[in-house]
Amino acid sequence: MAEGYRQHCLCEADRLGNDELYALVTGAVRHDRAESQQLFATVTPLLIAYFEGQVQAGRISREDTGRLVQQAFKTLYLEQARHDPGFPFRAWLIEIARSTLLDNLGHRGITAPDHPTPLAGASAAERHDTPRSACIDLSTQ
Image 1 (cartoon, rainbow, N blue to C red):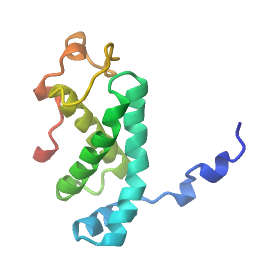
Image 2 (spheres, rainbow, N blue to C red):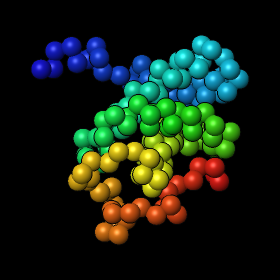
Image 3 (tube, rainbow, N blue to C red):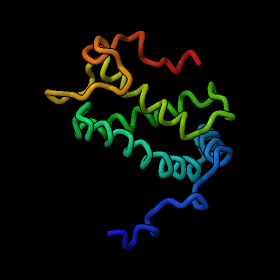
Image 4 (tube, rainbow, N blue to C red):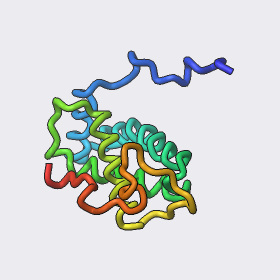
């Protein structure tokens, strides 16, 4: 079962650090094609993993994953100037993904399964209808 695991595992030595990731974002904003492609190739698997977890938890349908990944990547691109590079990049990326999810659930822009699993930490009222005010608005940060 573990055969081949190490070759597919993203070892810490192979991972880009915060400074390198923020440099890729800056390059993408400058329309540097190579940096844009590397940024997309780096963050897409992380976003897919996040949204696949939401599918497995029953919060969203598998068909919505691709669109949500695109929306989160677009938010990353548009909001990069407002973010503090001292904040861990991957934490910021997951916060963008979470905000994208909540925004889409709030607007019912995604197809929710018949019996969605509530978001972790949500109160009973929030589990059934997340108000817009509870969504994180990255445009104000």
